[in-house]
Length: 383
Image (cartoon, rainbow, N blue to C red; front, side, top):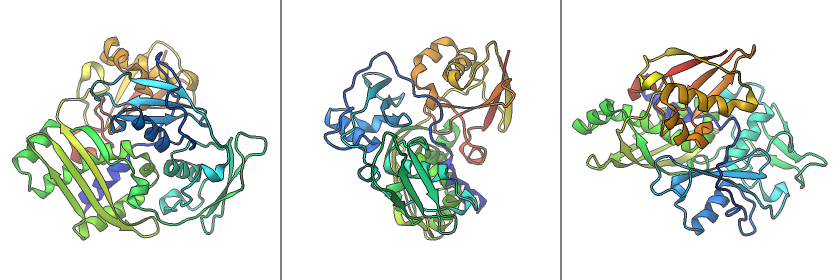
C-alpha cells in the first residue's frame, strides 16, 4: 500500500512558481487584451489559441498583482516563436466579483489547524488563474468552518464587494484543468521495463508515479493538497479507478484516475494525455553526473546573491555545472526550473531542480523510490 500511496502524492510535488518573472527581448502586448474578459491564465490562453498558438505547448505566468504576464513555451515545443515573452495586461474591470468566479476552496487537514490567509489566497488563485496578493486584498478566515472572505484593500488596484469563499469540495477538472501534458521524460530503465512487461502491475505503478510528476508541474494547485492525494489514490486503487494506456511504439498515452476524497474532491476523473520519451534530461550536477539518491551536492559560487538577484544565481549555477551554452539556451526559463531557498545568514542557499522539469532530471524524495530518477539537493555557498 505504501507504493500505491506514493503515486498520487507525486503529482503534488511541484510548488507554485517562486521568484521573479523573467522576460526576453522579444516583447509586445499581443495577447494582453482578452476581448472583454479579465486576463486570467485560461482567458489569456484562449486568446492565444485564437491567434494560432498551440496552447498545450506553453504556460502563462502572471506577475503578482496581474499587471503583466509572461508566455513561457515548453522547452521541447516544436517551432516555438520564442522562449518567453512578457506582455502588459489590459483590464476590462477591476471588480473582484467579476474576476474570482470559482468561490470554493476545500480545506485539507494537512494545511494545519489554523488555516493561513496566504494558503486560502494561493488556492483561490490556482482555481481562478489569478495572482492576487495580500497587498491587493484582505483575506479573513473563519478558523472553525474554514470559510473565508476576500475583500479589496481600500485605495488599492481592485474594487468590488467582499466575496465569500466556501469550504466545499471541487472536481478534478477544476483542480487539474490541463489535461494535455505533452512530452514527458521517463528514465530509460523504467520505460524499457514497461515495454517488456506492460501488464506488470508493479511496473505500471512506478510508471504512473513518474507520469504524475509532470501532471503536478502542469497543474500546480495540487501542491496544496498532498495529504488528500494519498486518500484519492487509495480510493482509486481500491475501486479499480486507474486506467493507463500507452502505445509502446511511439510513447503516446493517456492516464485516467477516477476517485474522490471526502470534503475535497468530488467523484470525478483526472485525465492526462502525454507522449513518453526516454531522452536523458540533465542532472543539476557537475558535468551531468547522476547523483546518489538522497545526496547533498556542495557547490561554491564566487558571488553573493539575494532575492533580487536570484535569477542570476540560477543562471550562474547552471553555467558552472553544465556549461554556459546550456545556461544560455534556457536562460529565460530557469526561474521555473530551479527552486532556491536562501539561508538566514545569507551565506548561501539550498537549491533543488524541479520535479517534473522537461530540462533537468530530479524527483521528489518519495517518488524517487519508484521513478528511477534520484532526489538530491544542492548546498550552494557564496564566496
